[in-house]
Length: 319
Image 1: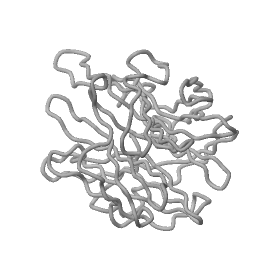
Image 2: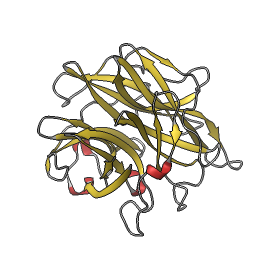
Image 3: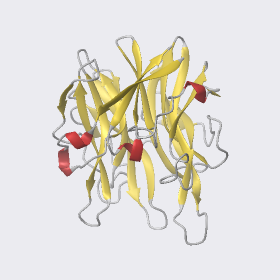
Image 4: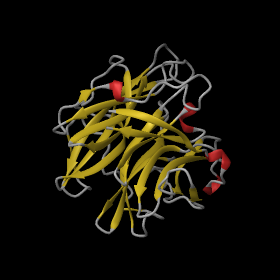
């Protein structure tokens, strides 16, 4: 299996985004309709109270050739959480799937902290209008920190397999400082949970299911799983936990693993994206992948440089 790059397909700087958002189309997530594909993404507005970013969910509708844009949403699809809630300061990402006549949206909510920058949790919202708007089931998360997963539970990706809900997500192993007075940085790994109804979840508590390639301080993010030829393939992104924002080679890149039983995963990054050339939109970084099937073909959406500031691209997964 290999991935064939098809190029950048959406640049938010060329469009008017809702809710005063500027730039950024992060973590693209596809929902396939009969004659088009809706791609949800996280974009950012500036919090007037302090100048920090607030992440909102918008979408772009594209023809099934995944080139022609039909429209960009003129409103965000879900408001941010209330005062003190887990998603008060942003939603990034939101994973969507059909369930009966509704669409479930699993949100990653962000809330600012004092000693560290942020904590996260996974919420659930439901759409009854074909994904134009979503309403929360409640003000709290359906999956959050626990005894052995103390922080930064997020990036939930959900599939129903054999009548059972499976969620792959990330959990923080903790925060560290490289030196006294340095800004704390986080490390997180990929975990797994199951559910009978998509609301009440049982974690495989603190079980890291994907091996590290960079050592114990490797951070893994945004798992996505697709079944091809009877085998489950996971794509995710990974990076160094320190000095990753500006130093070339330490930022996000795409990883890959496969499984035949949804329990044991074999890491095989040779099936990830080919390297980019200097000057390309994804040369400095490849991150936030999302795998999906459309009319019998398999694709991978992903972000490039600067964590998706200039949007996302597409690759075809070739079995």
